[in-house]
Length: 306
Image (cartoon, rainbow, N blue to C red; front, side):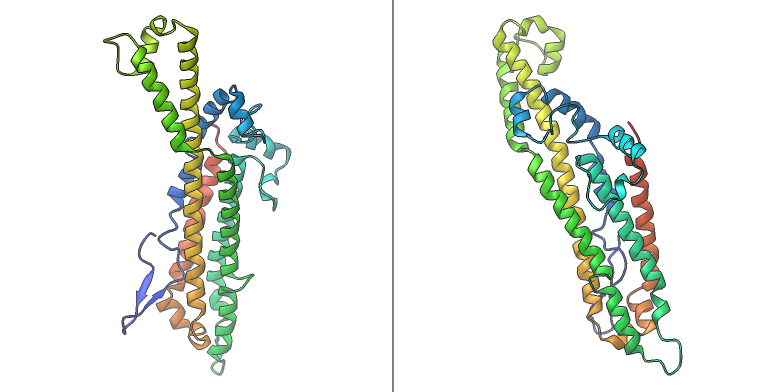
């Protein structure tokens, strides 16, 4: 499904097809949006003890039970109370549920693409005296309009961009967190007994009394744990942000692909052979159906408590 989606004409020009673009790697995108969630939840339990960190996230991101980030258990509880929780037009407040909500919108969009393309031949001329240009004008409307397939793509782009902004607002500076962790780790390394393991955590586990000799070192150890938790939290959020950005790019390519196709003259768009041979209509409908099926698999997996 991830092949080059362009057909070359005899004069050397290329046509985008109606299929799933190679940028739409939904497997990597969904994994990026969900991987690391248990580690993030554990990190947030540690960080909610840090008043400075909690103040940095005033909307409850690090407070209470971590309601700001969410997790599968919370989402399942919400669905038990309201089965339509993920079908509402407004996304859920917590990050995990919102990622699943967005994935559901992607699934619905893929289904729309598949069903629409499958039904597209129904508006093509069948009578001998029917004009291809008239049908082509209708095809153009289906492909490129506010309520057509480019409109479907534009909606996903907007929802994904909104989610990216939300993630940027709650995430921290990963590079700074990594630097802070390394500085504290280096400081503790200088104070550990000579000849001990190079791994500071292994050294602490083996001879905790050797390091815990002062309130200052105890504080440094606690700071190290918080710094490690920050790195984990920011890394998971950054991975999600990058995955959502990839999703945005893929749907932008889809939108531009369909806009380019819609610029063909109406007579070509109304010609069954042009749609089937050049734009690969039959293959495209199947590709979008397969894409929807893969996306639905990730939706089901997102509701599994690990």
